[in-house]
Image (cartoon, rainbow, N blue to C red; front, side, top):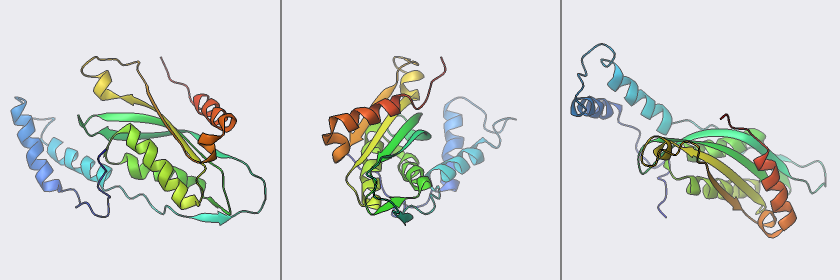
Length: 200
């Protein structure tokens, strides 16, 4: 499986070139890029790519010392994130649950979400996001007991091909005890499934 180029090693988005390419795309689509409604489209498209791919994720590794000895689960559910399918350059939306069992230190709650944003703001695959977020949280929290559950709606399936708008893709990564303890894994899965509701 291929890897996403880390933001710190990938060149910044070339907005000027994207403007030129977007103008060429509009021409190739039979549109007039100079007409009202499209005149500023190349600039807007370039700005969006820059905002999305050069996104500032903020501080990722803030931790706090534990003040208790309870061997409990920290779980965030209902986290929404958008990413881009690397095969079709179409968006997909994720509803994500992240869980871990803290050891000596706990991560700031917002850092769990930021770790997801790091991987979502790229040309991606849902499977890779799920695995890489779990691995990075395990590293940041200093524990192998991490689980990530993701349910995705992919516009490359909803808008094209089979046009299956109701289909959802579920991926999960259970590390350490979250995978080896069936009762714990079932609890996390139950909480993840109950964490959000989709409109029909």
